[in-house]
Image (cartoon, rainbow, N blue to C red; front, top):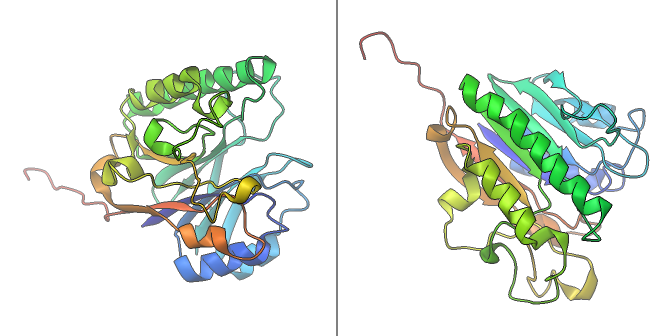
Length: 265
């Protein structure tokens, strides 16, 4: 089973890119972020024609998240992150797909920091940890997939000082990510590629894609019930270099098929 996360940065503008990647990569499950469209504007017909069922939560102009499943219909569980009924931003969706639970999350950017936007980022992280802890306690197979807007360590950003004040690499942002993984979540890409940068984002500015001046912001975290099945993980870097590309590239993992033991084994 192949599961991917992809910040598409406007699904209607990048629809040809998305469809071409789906045909080529054939992921079984895809978490999308930054749809930048309303619910009514989501290109459901084109996605369905490509062989994917979908659930989504859109939002005008910004945000928006979706989960796609190849030859299957995701079963929607949640369309918002618990913990703050007043939070109207479309940043979280959760579905059951092919025997596992998958999220698509789009964590707040947090800039400028310090300030209210950074406080919102840290609060959102806290709510995510509270919700994620329930999965660990229940010992269910879960993939927390999405754009976390955090480069967790120095390895996850190209050598530079130009981002030093950015919310993406602040000590509090990194500490929040580490607090999440310490619950027992496995960072799939970093586990299988412990010494490679594995960037997933290259800003449009300052020629950063040609210079490979990237950051690793998009993560796939596996619950303990699922981590033993991790087989491969990577980033489809070349997607970032295509015409009209998103500033992110898809990150992905593959899982071995579940093996159910009979009594006495």
